[in-house]
Image (cartoon, rainbow, N blue to C red):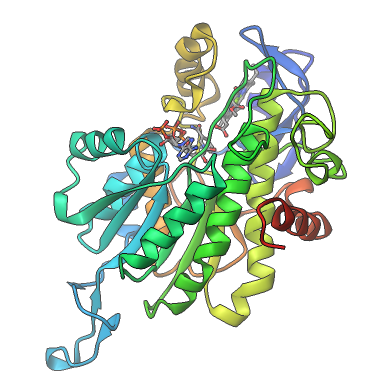
Length: 383
Ligand code: NDP
Ligand code: PMR
């Protein structure tokens, strides 16, 4: 497969084996748009949704709207599990919506759709047939730290326990020539995808700790990797004034800013694991869901890219995964009782079986993860 993929590449791209199923691409352009450094992705990819296989991964606990999590007084000593509560950011489209649907359909989860556009989220939930009693929409704009704080407060006041948090939302601005900024003045991709989620996860960690659910999880959606350098741009505030808008201090590059934010997501997951897994029993994990070429993530790309990307992934790279299948994968990471290992980056092989993927060198740099944590804490006002 690696050879197959390599033979498809123009000469300006080099591929080398990174992990069991990862490859790295270097500088080139596709459909006239820069395709920046250190692009890595799984090569063993599934074709069509093996719905039964995916569904089988989802927890088969019985439901009861009671606390504590396990009702030991159930008849014949049978343990019943209350409905779990999961928060999914960016559940108004794509992977987040498909995951919300997959979890809600089990009848075992109440899904909090944490979205910036309330009406869009409501319509989306209805359009995919999520039943009224299995979801709520709560406003969250990750591009505003104030909104993140408000969300955490509102959630706490709802009185619901928190059993799983899925950091899924993202923006991708590959054609932007100039940086744009969050409410607090951070470059938008890293500000939303990393800093917004970093604050959210930190604020909700106590709620997760308090959950009495048999397993509690914090999942951060990962993807391709880029190089963050020595974080000088981030340490300078990522505001394009005193410092660069790029984490590595370089010139603005929208595609790289997204990839930087994804490395941050994966480093953050591992730092959470190192700091809190043992003490709290929370599972911290990340995943590569596959190439879901049809989602809204590519809305800012040029029209030609949006037209050609899905067939290119479907028929040439064979990296394409439907939203439904990817949603099943993320739902599995949230709820499969066997996926309790923490600090792991999940991927799927061509038989739709999950496996622990290796992280790239950049995404597994423990020293960088620690530094990123400390700088991010300062930027979001936690230190
Ligand atoms: P979508 O664009 O379909 O979904 C992104 C979601 O994030 C939307 O619901 C969007 O809300 C939300 N969002 C964006 N900005 C904010 C914000 N400021 N506050 C709150 N929510 C926000 O993309 P995908 O489903 O593809 O992406 C989901 C995740 O999957 C991302 O983390 C992405 O990095 C990852 N991923 C995707 C891959 C792919 O091939 N598509 C591959 C690998 C990883 P709204 O609906 O209002 O725009
Ligand atoms: Mg890629 C060989 C397999 C393969 C896979 C699995 C992906 C996934 N891509 C592959 C190959 C190639 N891509 C090749 C050979 C090229 C050059 C012709 C190429 C180009 C390319 C571009 C320009 N690919 C892209 C882009 C994007 O803008 C997408 C991106 O980086 O979004 C951030 C993208 C992606 N390719 C993938 C995946 C999963 C993406 C989206 C990554 C994400 O959403 O996080």
